[in-house]
Image 1 (cartoon, rainbow, N blue to C red):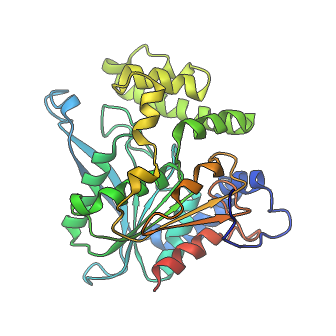
Image 2: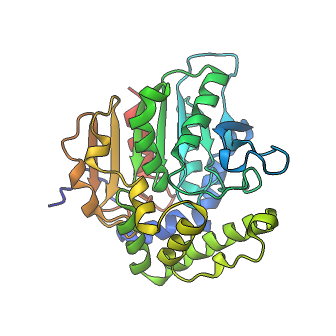
Length: 341
């Protein structure tokens, strides 16, 4: 039984989970989000973070790629002032630090006085050239290393972390590993996180052609960039033309990621109550019953975990939670409420 315990009232015409999901990623919201985020974008410093050693490619092109390089955008109100509240934002699969929901949250947190770090995973945004190896969702160590590099370089303490969709999945796994990794995270919010990747992939393929087309198109574009940048590694490859998200995932997992196939790969970044047991910081999970991409049935297993509060809304779609036609989001309100105490 899925219990709805987070209430918000969408404006007329915004109750559908499909409408919420599609508008959230639309050009209409992009225009509004970029306008609201003008200040945080203008203040951003483009960082290259050290993701740790990359033994797969340490000898590639005379050692140029011996270490993983990751990009982030760091906006600070006053670089000379220490101990300011700081938020780190993770995007979802084939999103980026420029995604609508990232910019929307960045703008809101910036207006509340937070410094903001918008983090790009490998091969997201314009970062395909930074590393020869391809992104996959089990590359957690490099994300932790990149965050630690940023934290130590700028002497940041007591910061907060929020991730959306696949970024929400990464945020939960980072939260679990944070104490042993030396990350001084105060609290975590995870919005519509991927819990069971195999079921999420099946939902994407079965929830309608528009979702399949959206992710297939974006992923194919990303793979083509990688092929063009590293022809000695991927020249002649046709992986971007494999139809079906699951079939392409299986091919990539076998050929380029060291897994026996999609099933082993999915299990590698699945989140379960057992894997999250022992969380040492407050974690809030927000999801929607009408999310067409992440099955809400994956979440009840998280009920009762110490330090984790699960919030389920009747409406919101995937990473939407749009309150009105000005594209103001209840998820942004929720995040600010958690971190403003």
